Image (cartoon, rainbow, N blue to C red):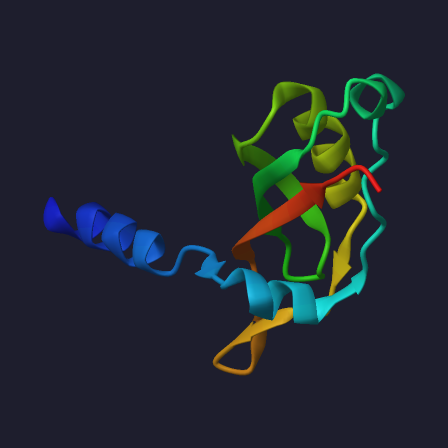
Length: 110
């Protein structure tokens, strides 16, 4: 039937990555290196929040990072740091699954 491939496509879309709230994702993070605060940004006193979205593999590795918002001079170091994060696997029906989670970093001068 022509509907079978369509049904399969809808099913796999429904079983896409698990969406995890930021607080839960940060609790599951077992390695979370802080971003490097760029010297020029610090000298110019550039502060603010960078919001990213991490795609996390069933093994807990960050496989993709999307920049959702923030000052461009700060987004690159935040994304580079997030790529090095490691997570305890997220479970769905008791099995490790891919997940997507927002993660934000606050850059502030001390």
